[in-house]
Image (cartoon, rainbow, N blue to C red; front, side, top):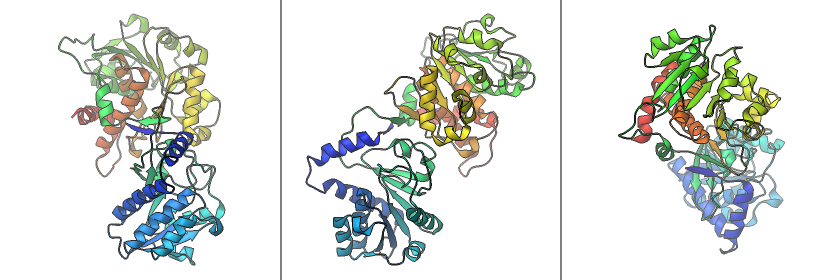
Length: 477
């Protein structure tokens, strides 16, 4: 599992370690790892041209010492000092001793660089870049060379992933000691590029701010039938979806559900003929939900339109309930909070904005804060869909789960319906809402990657559903 820690937690761990080490040891460890990552990216260090963008903090010192190491290996290194009087003295002396120089032509040096190292602002920075730093960041992005960020791209918020103004856009971010939430959460994540973690000996506490599952974690959570299992013991998921106007939503939600690990799927709604035509194994019922038979979870909302009558009955059931799409339009915090079983809400940014009473842009700019606020306000687990899918619990101190899989091609009509069915099936199979949301998002993203192919191509939601079995096998193999 990839775990991320708040700036406060990382700072405390750094201070505790520095108190036990000779002065400067921690910076030298960071610089050594940073230089090694840059050398690997360059391929050939000797004769390469490296430019350091150096701020006044420790990130600037890390960049200077790493630049000195590259200069000793034959690179031509130039340092652009944003605050010459406040540049790290030891790092600057080391760079000069190794043959590096202070730049007298920043635009020209950046334009000719094979690699630009961003050491402008550290993890304590807030707000966007100042004008001079922003100008250098734009020049670095426009140049042909690679951009490497020191610890995190300058201009992004390490704790939240928010980007309040202009920020560096890196090809690689080399972070030290521990991941920071902003490296995993958009809009900052897409500015970080590839991530490399350098171990500098930090002893961080177990309480993370965010975490991202990996294959082994997902494999450990996936339901597996035992020898004595039958379809009912494996769980039955009920799906209330579709309408005369949107029958396809029912088909797609059922498509996700039948491939999600439960033993059977009950469909309730007006699209039974369309569902049976595609999935004859589905158990269908005209409704109401309470008359359809026993289930271990309900999924309600995809394609319902204005039909809200079934929502109250589903919410009254003493089983986990996933509410998505049109079902979210009729929710109030009271209706969710009075439930005794688990509830999982799965909005996209627009739906989350409606639930919070704010604008969509506000949610997209502050995804972490938004998902936490939604979970707290509704007393439910919330899966916020988007470029980085987040899963939050209402309880304080529980790390937000960040989904690392997916592709931009997943932004296609009906893909959320597939995710709802898949995740509801995992709920019926016995996973807790937080685990079901995180595992569902993970498999959904993997399936989309498989459907899009290694080079990426347009996909439709039914292709994502069709690739879920292969994604599941990838995880457990």
